[in-house]
Length: 64
Image (cartoon, rainbow, N blue to C red; front, side):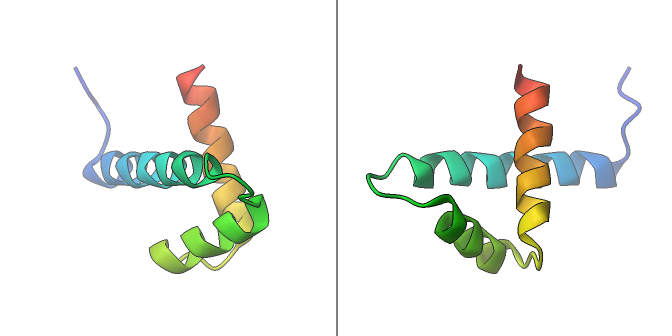
């Protein structure tokens, strides 16, 4: 039985997209984390680099 709300499911899906985008972009030769983070912030309407970092860590912990 899944007791997650629609909001939680949607957030988890969005977080996973952000994480996957980050990983894909970082695979490019010469990719810099700061610039990748800026690009993702613009793409997803996020205003703080710490939010991207937090999402990455949350997904990494979930996947491990």
